Length: 140
Image 1 (cartoon, rainbow, N blue to C red):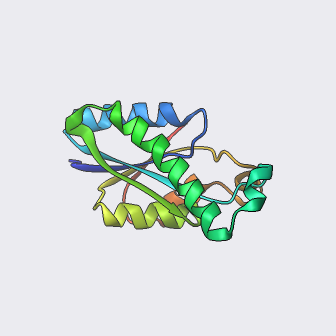
Image 2 (image 1 turned 30 degrees about the horizontal axis):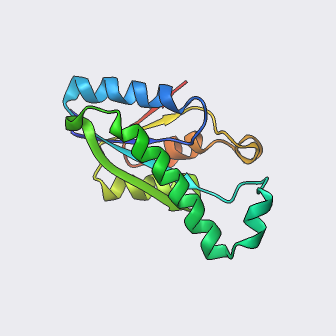
Image 3 (image 1 turned 30 degrees about the vertical axis):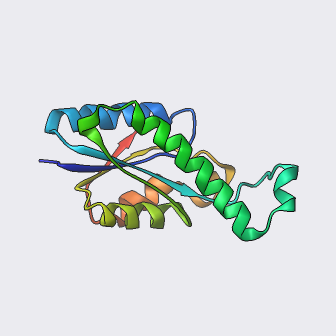
């Protein structure tokens, strides 16, 4: 049923559980897992960040997020490893674009955003569920 699954991870302590559920689905269907992270400028920037240009800060944030996802994907069975996608932007948009790029047939996402802005504006998961062209599995 599924051969390509996009797993949207936010770097929260709940992210490993989301990946665990996605792996269980992938194992059942023999699917490839593609990991995705949307990068935003954090609300509380460390003091070192103020010395960087906008491009340098963006590159540093994307690089850090990519390294985290590469570490996670390295622990997956080789036959399940797919793309690692990290982009700066609105999380729901990044996830939708990534799902399109890897031709995902299912999106797996955690139920709650990790930052305070998600709580005020509504969760990324809700946006993805409401706008995705694909089935979405929300992991609580």
